Structures are given as C-alpha cells and as structure tokens.
Length: 518
Image 1: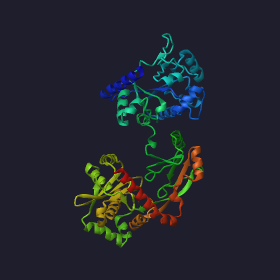
Image 2: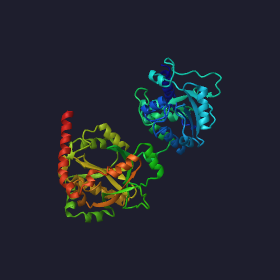
Image 3: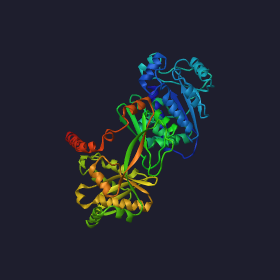
Image 4: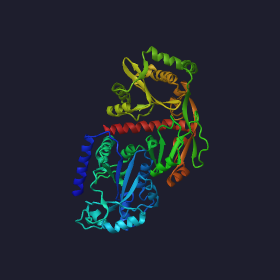
C-alpha cells in the first residue's frame, strides 16, 4: 500500500501546484526511473529472469526520450536512474553525453554492488540514487526480493545522495487520469515551482491498466517543444505493416530528412508515403531507396473568376444560375455552433450518399462542434436556402493551393444545384485570396463525381507518389506490392466495371450494421 499512498500524495501535490500555477520560467527537471529494458512488459520480464538481452529494442523508449531532450530548445536537466538490468548501452550513453543528462542509480537489492556495476560500465560519476519499490508478489519474486519486502533499506552511510526528497510529480500516472491539455498545464506549473517531473520510459506510448500509468509522449513532446513535424502524421495498418503519411501533403512540400525517417522508425512505422507537388515544386535528386508509383489529383488552375466562368461551359453556368434563381445564397461562414449544427444535420440526413455508405452518418453533435471549432488554416463556405444551411465547403489553405476538404449538401435540396453554387463561391474565394490552384480530391474512383469535377473545369493531374521503406518489414511489404492500394493496381476500364459491385456491397454492409445497431 505504501507505493499507492505515495502515488496519491504526488497527484495531490501536482494538483496543488496546478491550482497555484505561476508563469515564472525555470529549468525543467526530469526524473526517469528506467525500471525495465524493453517497451514490451513481457520481453522485459523475460530479460530480467534470464539476465540477458532478448531483442534489438533494448532501452528503445529511453533512447527516444534522450533524443527529444537533446533536440529541445527548452532548458532541461534529466536525471536517469538505471537498475542493474537497464545499464545503458553504448548508443544510449552517447545520447546522454550532451550536458543535459546525469546518470544515477535505481537500487534494486544491493546498493553497493549495483553502484559499482553502474559506475564501472558507464565510466561516469554517480551522485544520486533512488530505490525501486514493488507492490506485487510476482514482481518481488522476479526482482529476487523477500516476499514481504516492498523495497530495500539503503544504509545511512551510503555515499550517494537520495533523490527522494525532491518534490516529484508522476507524469505517466497523471497521463492515465487526465487529458493531455490538463496534464500539460499542471506540469508547466509544477516546473515553474521547481518541481521534478517523474516518468518511467516503458510507458512512453503504452497504457498500463493494473498500475494505472498512461502514455505521456504527447504531453512530454509539447512541454519539450519538439517533434512538430510528427503532429500531422496519419497512420494506418495494412496487413503486417504500419504505413504513415502526412495529412498536409497536398498543401505543403514534403521532403523527408534522414532524422525524420529515423523518428518514424523509432515509433514503429514501416513505410512513409508522400507525393511530389509537381504543379508547383519538383524534388531534385530523390533517394534511390524511395519507391515510385503514379497517383493523381483533380486540379483547377485559378486565374480569374471570369476565365473560369468562360471555361466551364453553358450547362454548368446554367446550374450556377439555377441555384441563384432558387434562392440559394453562398457566403464565407465563420466557425460557430450554428455552423456546426447545420453540418451535423447534413451528416445525419442519410446513411447513403452517391450510392455508397456515408462515413460521417451517426456522428454526434458534440464531435462536429469540436471539429469545427478546432479547425485551423481553413475557410468554411456555406450555401443557405431560407436561412437553412443547405450545403458547405471546408476549404483548406496551403502553399499556393486551396484544397476542398469537404463539399456536402442536403439531399432534399438536390434539385437546387447547391454544390455548383459552392464550387463557384470557392473559385471566387481562391481568386480573392490569391491561391493559384484549387484541388478537389482524386479522379478515377467515382464516375459520376469525376464527371461533376470535369464539368467545373477540374482536370486529372498526374503526380508521383513516393514510398519510403523504413524497416525490414517495410522493405518486404514494398517488394510484395502491399504499399499500393488494390483500386490503384486495377486498370481503369476494369475498375469502372467493378465500382457498381463495390458500391452495392458497401451500402448493404452499412444497412446491415444499422439494423443490428437498432
């Protein structure tokens, strides 16, 4: 019970610091208790029992944290408390030789012997110690302690200084209880008061239910002000590999550096994919290890509104006029609860759109409100009919380009050419904001939508998509062709013939799920 009580006390301690927060800047102090050698708990237990290394990811999370600290512009002092089972290897020691770190001892059973081992192996002066506490019986057996012994007593004449008298706050435990924002605010206040943030590296990305520790990576990243380039990553699992891309790959140029690829590898990503924005930028000397595939986007070059109006043809011009005659009015709309409510009604009007299951159907009003209020670097365009939001576009701003992230309208107003009016407004806004290009998804996956895009002067623009294999699994997956989507491998004529079948399966799957849900 002793360790649990201490943990509760530290939570209250943190809350007290948080409530009395200050803006005073102080050096950030970290205490890192490196109890286990691997991110995997099972592998760590096996390694400790066998007294040997059992994999290549030895102290992997510790190395990630050390790199984050070394890259941080924040003034940091990190105290690393290693056990006899987590002695830093050559790679980690090199990372700790940056002036921001200090190696210390985390006592398990024998203070003097473990101190000598750590000192001899690291060739560093050791100043501080902490004592590892163990509540569970199985862990005591593993650590070769007496069954009644929670923690050992360090002799009073032990030459190292105890670190236990420092005010500490358990960042990984707080990350289990509170949101990232709450923990971040509390941690910053705690730092400003001179407190020490305590973490166990094995919980950097993992969540432990029994010991109530949660992933603290997001909070630590924000406090250290690092890894900004990873914030827009989108990760998906395909077979046995994890593939990542950047959600902003169409709005800005992406050329991955070696350090960026290394970070992805550290986080278990097997393949990174990105496009070359050929319409405004070309990549010189791409790496030979990058695998190329052909991709495309629907692109409109924006010059003047009059030029676009001339190019779209008589039929599309009449559709825009039709919307006007029907009383549809378009305008730029500021994010608000009213806009969110209108979008929520559009999302939940029907589960089937364009003959396919609609993924946003069933979303809660709270989720939509949060999405709208947190949207950044974009413009919302609304189409209104009798003061009701009949349709909207979310236009994402980029470097020389605007991207139509969403364009949706109420099906009950499908006779009023709402989407045509919204496209016309989008072109007008792009001209006013001096965007040179307007993008509207891809072409080739939906015949009727492709036709709509072409009628509004969008053309199929070929681009190169690069795939960077990062791990051995990634290299195998690329050789097997798993980096490509099945729909992109099929010849276009065959794909168009299979689309009706795909749509039928897709919408009937949605109908079955809705019946089962009700």
